[in-house]
Amino acid sequence: MTLMIIQLLIVLGALWLGSRYGSLALGAISGIGLALLVFGFNMKPGTPPTDVIYIIIAAVTCAGIMQASGGMDWLIQIAEKMLRKHPDRITILAPLSTFTLTVLVGTGHVVYTLMPIICDIALKKGIRPERPCAVASIASQVGITCSPIAAAVVAFVTISNANGFNINIPQVLMVSIPSCLMGLMAAAAFSFHRGLDLDKDPEFQKKLQDPETRAYIYGGGTTTLDKVIPPSAKRAVYIFLGAIGIIVLFAIFQDILPSYSAIKAVDGAPDYTFSDGTTASAAALAKAKLLIPGYTEATTERLKMNIVIQIVMIAAAAFMIIFCKASPKKAVAGPVWQSGMVAVVAIYGIAWLADTFFSNYSTEMQTMLGDIINKYNWAIAIVFFLVSVLINSQGAVVVSMLPLAYSMGIPGAVLLGVLPSVYGYFFIPNYPSDIATVNFDRSGTTVIGKYLLNHSFMIPGLICVSVSTLVCYTLTSLIF
Image 1 (cartoon, one colour):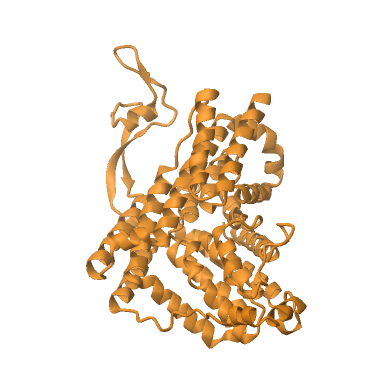
Image 2 (spheres, one colour):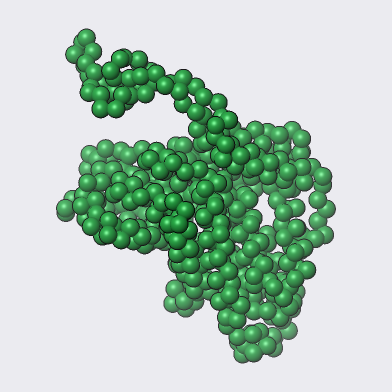
């Protein structure tokens, strides 16, 4: 037990140190923890989440190419037109806009262009910017568990299918989207009257006494409405949305996917002994494509959805390059592609480190947590939330913690029901979207807080995640 605690402290220490540096450091410093476990304690390495990583690379490449074509500018412009048309509803429409963008693109980092626009609209309408800005930042991350191309959703489906819970992407979205929307609306309802109105806020009014500060707050408005969107940018959006539609179509009608001959291990087959005395498991024989009666058998396998997503996304990126004047060089320099590649490294290191620890101590974990989890299945949501607070990635939480949850016997329907709980990194306001939102709010009403945890994102985040998880858990209980 002492050795296990020491090794757990190494894992937590690596994650804590990585979060201090942020960005690529989350994945890279996880490598130090992995090296200590493998070389220092002779632990068997876990399995890196290659399937999920490949999907992220394909999706981020496609989204990055769309951004390079100018398609993202068109989506932002559409959102801005709606927001400026209904400025009095900015506290409700702003989170819906950032949520929708994240659902479409699969990453919350697309909101940086929209956030200063939200702040500008609120100021000109006399609405306290903290109200729409804070909940809009929360919404940009909540949308990740509702996107058909987000790592968290794809990983959940892939890992669940491997553990006997047969579910597809549309079925996940069927419960996650309405659940998260209800959570967002609850957070928006709270935010509608939070804080003092600007004309009654003594601190804000004091700032206006200084002409330079007043000019800074009410000047420098941001807009995309004057930007000319070329037809090629619109074509790129159509191609991107078409690719998402094709993926969803294949996920629903998987019978139309091609099938291939394959070899699988016979259930319960013993190890096979070769003529030289060496042995191999039936699974190893199947992997080597050796057909041996009683040990392996011929079968057919349908093309898996993780491969479908990769093919469709990469093909869509190619079409945008050819027909939409999208520059690959510009895509690589863009924030969508760069943030996506950072996520790849983070998930790669974090998930590999976590899987190494948990796979070596799966029996002990089941013994320690089994009674609580078996009696209160929903308690795994608390574990997901706490892990997310530490590692700042919903995809990494799913990849690293979901296999452990399945190994403890938690039903797949329960895990789907608590899926929104994988977003907890608003708790400590060090995530880029939250920090950027604070900087974009020229009024100074969106704040981190003197005591770190008393920040503008805390209550909207807790309301949103709590309501979303409760609704999602209820829906899955009724449906599955």
